[in-house]
Length: 235
Ligand code: UDP
Image 1 (cartoon, protein in one colour):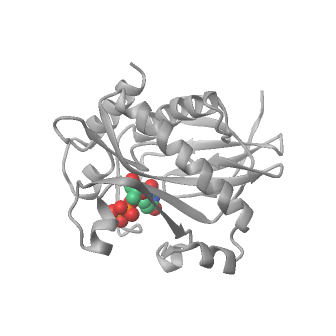
Image 2 (tube, rainbow, N blue to C red):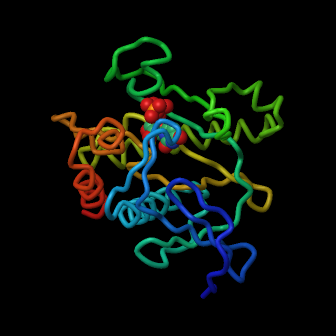
């Protein structure tokens, strides 16, 4: 067992704590929600509990399929034990169906299934509003090497295939999602969280949004949507 130490970083939805083991940290999931680069703020009751448990299930599933992740153990309702990684400062977005900022960027309608997944990178830099960047920018800024980028791309496409199947079996369509990766002992591993905060999930048949879009666009029944995804993931 590790001993929880001081908080070292507080983000929009999570707090990271040191432990007495330099290779372990505790990721604490809060109920705070933000959208549109924190222009909209709120609280979603019990979100932290649902996201911790949903992320845990998905990380365990991905690990079982050979994807390296930072997940070590679930410690409590809101706490996950993770490996200490050096976070790579890009958000990797994968899209299977058009939605959100892609529609605004390219002037396309929402809900169009794409034959090939579309990958995007956003520079994790709050002051700039996490701008969309390309692989040349990533190399130029030395955010990651060409070799690391190739690994990230390969892992991301594998994860997309696995997660599409995972949610499909739960009658949820994986529209798009965001991943973050870190360096750990010379390897690239999946980090952060995978939850309705970071994925768009539409119920098959009805198209009902079961993700953070309910908060972003004031669609109501926000807590129920997170609860519903949690129930399905644990069914
Ligand atoms: N996303 C995220 N964090 C971010 C930005 C996006 O988790 O900082 C996720 C978001 O939940 C969605 C996907 O990445 O599942 C694509 O988001 P998009 O760029 O369409 O976001 P929007 O600008 O519409 O919120």
